[in-house]
View: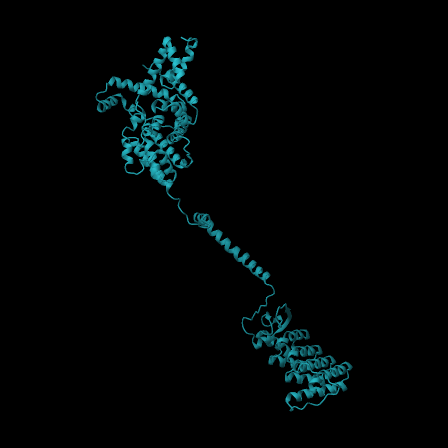
Length: 364
Length: 225
């Protein structure tokens, strides 16, 4: 017996007996224990007790042997597991995307609140949203021309009884015909917006010019200004010619002449201009008439003509005597008279200049 | 003490763990696969491979659960919970240990959780059914024993029941871990190293648990002879 084995005491071996009994001991420990047991009766008895205890414990039937001897529980467990695996393996329910699903569920569960909410939203939309949208669209408009027609055509009675309380020229882009807004005081006050191309608007403007005595000079001036682009229209031209002849206000007559500038070559206009040169007592009107006549003749004259050699106007050329020539001849004659006799020096000078301007045509 | 079935399964190169399992798996083409291939198949999403793995080990899992929990309902819960955990976490298994070790680690953890919950709330637990015979009186017990096991000595049977009852009471004094270690060592026949692997702890810790469990049982069952 080695000294080490002699020194091994029972208290060192006792803890190992449990594992010695169940074969969970290392080789070195086994050798140590077995050497000690050979000489120690107490430890041998303790080992015997340990083995007896383990034998008693392991010999008792186990719960599993008694409860599931037939395997029924195992079958049940397998079935339950398969069901659980089915649930796990099943693809998740593909819910279609439903926007505001929570809102619909909320509404379905609370019908009274839903009704109140819908009424509130309706009131809100009617009182706030719609005006806001209208204002918004109004702000977004960038000066676009907008023709607003009267719901019903203006009747002669309405026209005859109307008063114009205001004429406003609206900003216009890319059009010769300005947009005008007329505030009419008829049986029912109305606002008429449009330009001279618009038949209703042209009709009203022409009426104002034709019946100038019913409207103030400012309104007449504005209406003539608006009618410039429609001067070639026969009715408009007639009204303007009438105003140029008969309006009491020389500024209005001058505006009438200005508005007729584009139609100055028309016979009736030229006739009116010649009459104005001979009879209008306002030198400004006469000068304007001279300007229009010269302008109309300039439009008719061919380009590149040489100026006349002298201030004397030559008689009509070799060509046959046409109505046009007669008209021009009369223009020249009137201008010559004006040059000599007009009481206003500026008119005389302007007439002389006009004669020089229209001279080339006569030389031709 | 019979060897656990999983041990038989490990010993069998074909992966067949016994006649019952063989009958169950004969209907599939998977029984011939070894454990690693089966696990790989299951990880790839094969439900059949997973069920084959379940069939190989679930008898032992249920046995362990029954012995630890004592009540069939609790054992059923453990069985279900453990295998569902395995199913959900199979993709994390990296073959760093054997599949049965990993499986038993999950099963024992589930058992420990249940035992700890039971200890924390003993009033919630229904009485153990155990063999189901105690409530019916000794007369019925003897009659049943005669009927099923006519050769058994009634006196010996009665003594066995008494010993069993005392052991059951003594086992109740063990901590959940001591109980699991004792069960796995003495009733499942596992080595302490394997138990340590399954519990995720060292062999030394398992030794300590087994030592304490044995000492407690000896104190409780001192006159057991």
